[in-house]
Amino acid sequence: MPVAHDRSVTEPITRDTNPLRTLRDQLRGELLLEGHPAYDPARTTVSLRNDRRPLAIVRARCPEDVAAAVRFASEHDLLLAVRSGGHSIALQSIVDDALVIDLSAMKAVDIDPTAQTARVEPGATSGDLAWPAHEHGLALSTGDTHSVGMGGLTTGGGIGYLVRKHGLTIDNLLSARVVTAAGEIVTASPTEHPDLFWAIRGGGGNMGVVVEFTYRLAPVGHILGGLLVLPASREVVRGYLDHSIAAPDELTTLADLTKAPPAPFIPEEWVGRPVLMVLTAWSGSAEDGERALAPMRALAEPVADLMSWMPYPSIYDFTAHLAEPHGASIRMMFADDLSDQAIDAMLAATEAGTAPANLVHLRGLGGAFGRVPNDATAFAHRDRRYFVAIIAVWEDAADDPRPHEQWTTTLWDQVRAQGRGVYVNFLEDEGPDRVREAYPPRTYERLATVKRRYDPGNLFRLNQNVPPAA
Image (cartoon, helix red, strand yellow):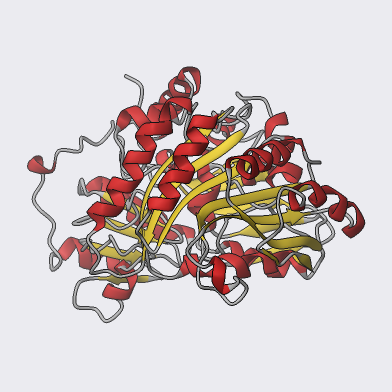
């Protein structure tokens, strides 16, 4: 029978009760309560907006620790949160009064160069995987920042630097070990629990806690990568959008429409002026890459050109700052086109932005990403052409977030009508209607049906939640 999650019917668990001490005795890892020297560091995430105090934090060391914590939360009707890398945009990995399963100590990475596969624990980050794989000339398309945890990234989909050539992270997932709401450890693959395997590839944390992933790796050693900074105009943005989806699959790009930062590579006269900063990753030959990038370089005289032949993991040098504590206000959508009016609104908002970083994040999709059928995984927006996110970022915890939030929502209201769906990993806590935008109706209904089988009591609800079907 499913556990009813009504806290009023159970005796409250406090930080000093015997049941918590009983849980501690079952763990190979640690149980961190308030007052423990590791408690405050463990509840801290990359977000300056997080200052939450969980009931307790289970710093798991093995799948059995995770299973024990899941069973304990179910038996005592506790809120249950799961943390991998701590990059949850919705701030759902650390929650007041919840039992938090912290996977950050489970970060083993085992590369099989002959089979070209990797077994990876969920607390490992994109950077933890990238360099060991690179030693064998292999890679996986993962997070935008080296510190993004593989657990949350993968279950949401995984749109990374190789997505047009090698697909989403989930498109390279061969199998996974999952702790279900019953506290059982099962294997999900095309032949074992195939419905669960379908659901964890895009359904977020709704179905359980993944404690190990097995990925197929791609033969990628060096890339033509780096940063191209162009003056911002409607023509440059339109040219980028067109080329980002027309280019060969080997070229994946991420672009930020923003004000030029006071960086060493930015000429002084350009600091504070609107630019399009294009981060590139070409995974073919250097000669072909130069040809593929030529149309983008020709859009305007570059403000800066930092593209070079580099080891694939070095791409993370360009986004290392995103691993530092910061606040952010985000709205995101997929789109098939952006009108001139939308681009003009983005340019005007960029000019008017007052946050340390106001940016419109644009990516061209297609390629291998778009050749997977929409119903093959719970991530079902394969036919979308563009990724669009409006982001205000600040770096001082004392900043009033309201002006930054207003900037985001004002621009969002101007362009959102052109959106078609949303990436679940880029959702703030925006309510059930926005969660439904992450999944077409049939996908949502199928997720709810799988949820009913594996988590009928909705124990795993601190996420972009899909409640179990009635």
